[in-house]
Length: 114
Image (cartoon, rainbow, N blue to C red):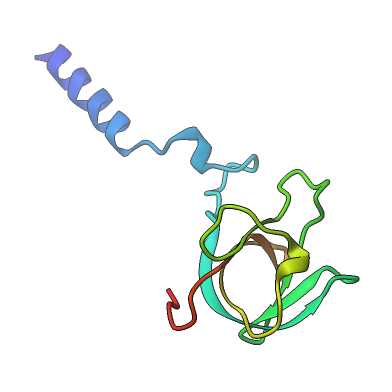
């Protein structure tokens, strides 16, 4: 009976445990990237920022640990320089302090907001 109790306790502990990749180094839950969509209203390549639905996103350089990925409509390829004001895009981002850092920008069909 005692072995059954230990087995149940260990089984329960394994069932409610969180995978290691869900924790950051400080032992807190890691935040997963967020996704939103909207229309590009301003791109500043010199400052590496883009405004999508009046929200500013930082654009990491190609040399960053997690460089920005850009995909144009109907392809798996693109470049930051191909984005234009008025394009409808979806953007994956994560928080960098109080700022939003874009991870991926994908052009989508107008009216296909997610």
